[in-house]
Image 1 (cartoon, rainbow, N blue to C red):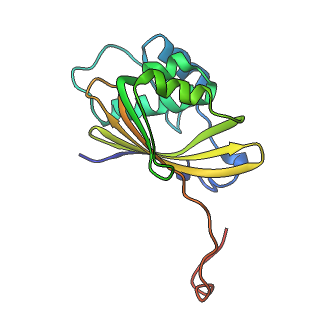
Image 2: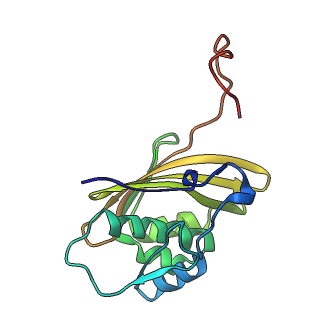
Length: 182
């Protein structure tokens, strides 16, 4: 089965904020609150509703769940975030060696997280019961990236979430003739 990929890199000069395509997150979050599944594509300006339950979950459903999760988190719609999570969800942050177990603790952790942060999906790759997102996060003027791994529970909800927050660093000397810096 081919992984499903969604990336802002599919458009020219995706690094330029003026060219980013932003889905209608309000519609997606609203639909999640009403337990409907939504999807967007870079070719559409409006979300397309998918009606009816599915027999089996697959990469498309987990991808939609993860996209709904990020949209709801960005909107601080904690009820919609809750609708994407399994009751026994586990959230791991390996770099700080923290683990949050259970939906209520997970929601509280995110509700109480300090700062006015904003998350934007750069890329989603989904296959089977696994999905990975590359996220651009801003807090004030600070910008950082995160890689998040998600595992589905077979019912269209997230049962595991693992975040990695790579730190930027300067490359070693001697490669300047081979690389382009941005």
